[in-house]
Image 1: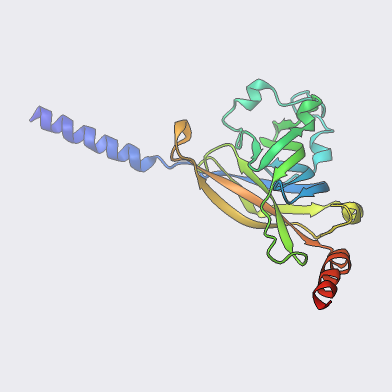
Image 2: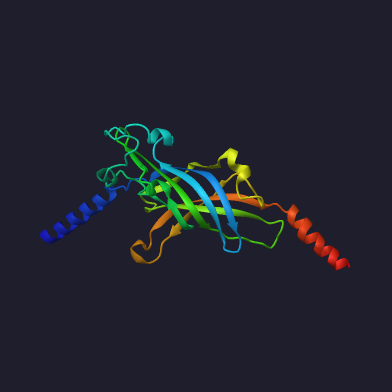
Length: 244
């Protein structure tokens, strides 16, 4: 009888513990992207050169200038990263952002030893920034050449499982620097405003990350080939040759 009572008591205690435990909601990470420059679109290689800034942050303050120019409440100025102790806190929600289709690129903030992560004690909010410069892998479909259009992709992912943090779909923004638009991509392409075209879940298979899921943010930059040169110098001469 004593054994049955202990078994019943342990079972009830376990059930109560499971019922009382409610996993916390994932932290919602706001995200913004600013394309500074776009060039060297290489259809043969499947790549393009991009200079892009991004900011990932929690809370309501989306200002990079504010985040990196004021004291963070812990006696640290805007040129100082969050301390190791702060970064190791459970409050660190996203542990970094990675670009999935980068081929050869550098983050200039880290390369130049500039501050890229700030933590604010008063409201426990984070701000992470990056400036990625380099080659990004792309896919091109040339079946409509020379009237072809493409979407250049910049795909970002959080470094933690989606049970811990997710991109906030309601606070995601992407844009070009307006006065640089006409000089982007050289003389052969027209570049249009970027847009966020997908939110995807990516299941990682194999290794220690097997079974985990990560949120992704895909920025699409529409481009269209300027076809007048190709029409006058390629298509019309070919038609005239065929008529002869």
